Length: 294
Image 1 (tube, rainbow, N blue to C red):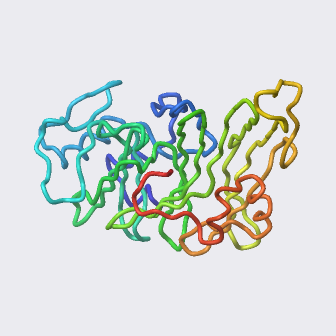
Image 2: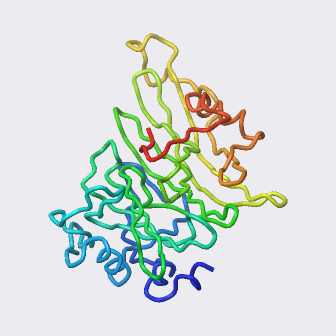
């Protein structure tokens, strides 16, 4: 349906990607690829016309030969959008409503580590013309899939983050509205290795399944945790013992409820054992309105 609506040059965005995919599978030291991403490589014939709307005559090639707007180009003074300096991915869909024709540009404006090195621009087509709506630093859409939610499309995305010896692989949803995104964290793994405790968590796969009439998002992850029950100064490799759930692969299911993916009641007890810190946000969820995942 999306292909037939967008047509023309933008239809290239929706063609299956191949070995020419430019989007990195390693983000901040975290291997991605659990999500069957629909975000496409930023082909020049697709991205350039969109960037010309944002910075007419000032489209340039930046790092890795990616197109973007010249950082020295004039920018709007009182608008919620800013032009990306580089674009590393593009995805078209019906993000605001079943009838809207929208596109997101995954890119960057020289963001630093706290904002995960990038952001997202949302554009929509009105009366045949593309219009930018907003740009948000820290809203990362390099690896995303779409889920149909009451006619519009919800994004399920992944990103990686590393800080103070902890590696995080985050899975989250994005609801893209005209006034900004609504982001909800589904889970975030935590891998670390200290003198008295070590844990390895990795997301293996994220897939849509179906139970009866309800779509289910199934996240499979690997978990293993060991700890030393001695004073940390006395811990040796042979002193570590399995702690928490036994090492292995585990499935967590999320059911679609309106425009949200909600952890299933059958998965809640396991979630609490795997992610005790995140469990304090159940059942309401960890929702933000444009801030990067923490």
